[in-house]
Amino acid sequence: MPFCVIFISDAPEIDIEEDLVTSEKDYETKLKCVVHAEPKAKVHWLKDNAPVSDLGHVHTFTEGNRHFYHIAKTQVSDFGKYTCIATNSKGTTNSKEIELTGMFLKLSLMINTPLKSYPADTHVKWAWWSYFKFFSQSVGLMSFSSFKYFLVYRF
Image (cartoon, rainbow, N blue to C red; front, side, top):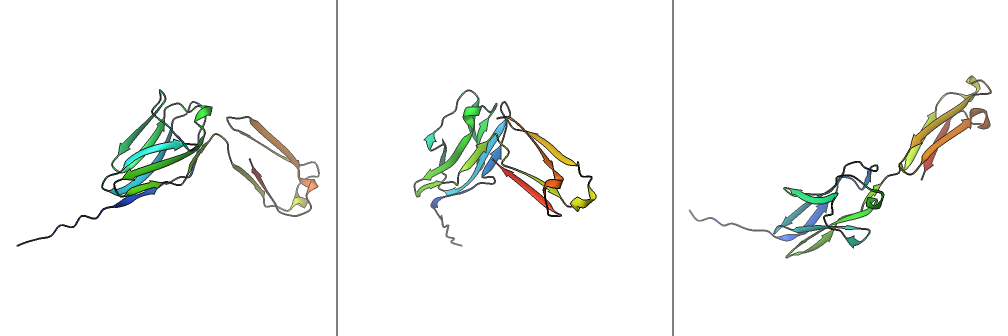
């Protein structure tokens, strides 16, 4: 019985799971893109729109169609915006940028109790650490007139 085999080829398609990756100095970091392509695509990475190569603490590797940019011990110089680029005979595709940062981008504090139930001298204090510096904040609750307070810090 005769049969027919059809091969479909197309330019690469790239999926990324995270477009924001937070790490710290001396921590291990892996950036990942998933490439779908037929014929198989060749993949390379850009950092801040410039080509990158395997260095002492950085190397790339592949597991099936998943492509990794692995940083063994993240350095401050590694922070930036990365792009995964896949090329085959049908074309070239760039992923969305993946930002590698050492900063916490958002801290939220919500007080959901009427302020009148706190003593007049009540303060809320919180602190957090990022590679770049230590942050601390203190707020007197009586300085707010609403009964609910939602605080968002962006860096």
